Image 1 (cartoon, one colour):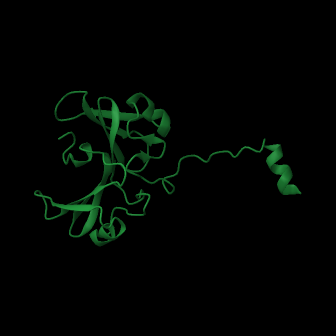
Image 2 (image 1 turned 180 degrees about the horizontal axis):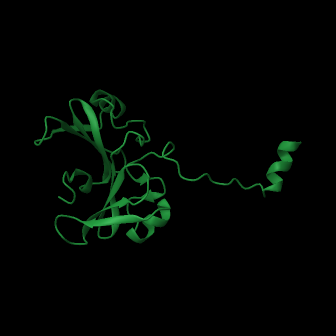
Image 3 (image 1 turned 45 degrees about the vertical axis):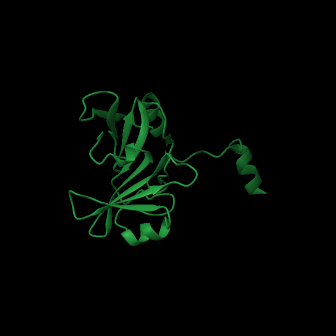
Length: 169
């Protein structure tokens, strides 16, 4: 009986927990409450934190990077035409929805995304780019940047922006 009374006392509405990096994950179209295509003006509100922006190397607001000012886990956003196009993950605490994270092996990526991965060399390191086209959504996917057979960075979002290896280029 007590279990029925408590929900009635608080209105029967679950109270959302504050954002926690342990429950965050990235997909080709979403990171938490931020989604690919979201306007820049809505990002800070969706993440409940202030964001800093920097202009890309092209020195135009047509393409720039944003990152949180707060202690949220290491991630960034690339925006084109003031809309989220790419989500950059730089911490092992944020996996993909399928469970791949920084520090995992190339073989895990190839296994999890079997049949969807295109492998490209990284000319600047001895690593590789594992490019995943998301089924049914030809314009989104992941890029796993590897070195020594280990995932070092994850980019999720829209093509071609996830294939820009240096910021907006």
